[in-house]
Image (cartoon, rainbow, N blue to C red):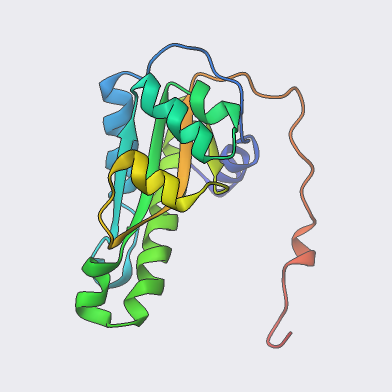
Amino acid sequence: MNSSDFLGFLSCRSSVREYEETPLADDEINYIMSCASTAPSAGNLEAWDVVVVTDEEVRLALAEAAFGQLHVGEAPALFVVCANYVRSMSQYGERGILYAVEDATIACTYMMLAAHARGLHSCWTGAFDEDEVREVLGLPPHIRPLAILAAGQGHPQARLAERMDTGEHVHRDVW
């Protein structure tokens, strides 16, 4: 893939909030997780964990925890991406909290792009009641849920969302 192909691949990805009921095959889930495991991480500690949710009752409970966002309950698979503070803090102390958050978000990005590469659709969801998600999934205290990535065969909107011009984000040498 050349750089132009890569930019095209990235540009045609969008967040999708309507899904078919078709479950993800194990090989699709495994592919997404294999891609996540290639993500860079601080000290190569991979301070992240994922709860893969395909059970309908658990998906619906997570949709409630996500303030009633329907796509969370309707997607055939959810990847709840979590920061694992202990794994990172063991080497970096207090700074490891930030590194765990960074590691988890990079892994989630790789997962989202892996789904796109397989012709699947996804939606990164960050709006949820963290304590409710903890309770639904039985997460230990040192694990923090950061994102719920919904994935499956979706129905993308006819038109991609407009993006800001790159120049709006870039500052050279100083602000």
